[in-house]
Length: 129
Image (cartoon, rainbow, N blue to C red; front, side, top):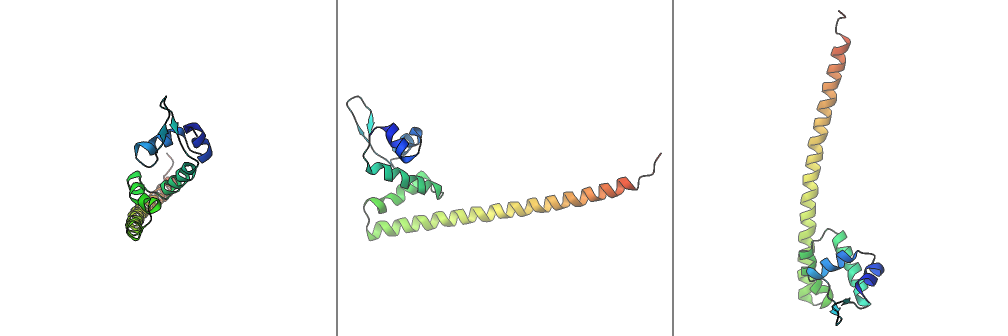
């Protein structure tokens, strides 16, 4: 199948497919005129890549995990496990940073509310000229 057909079946853009090829995550054969051709198996591979991206993995991380899918062995499974755990830990750290940022913003909002209450109270006690 050609690139447009794969894109439609896997529900991704043609640009995404080209990017996956650039990153070494997807391969195609080429016709004599240079058009890319894919197999039916590539539809599921692209869907798998999409799930990996949706889980927050980078192209580099996906490339490190793919050997476990392509040639599953105890070693490739262990390598994939280590990489996935590292990615989870990275995301956990990012979540903690975001939570701390949110808490700081909540403190600023509370201070703003207190300040506004002071301003509102002061406006009511101002003597008329």
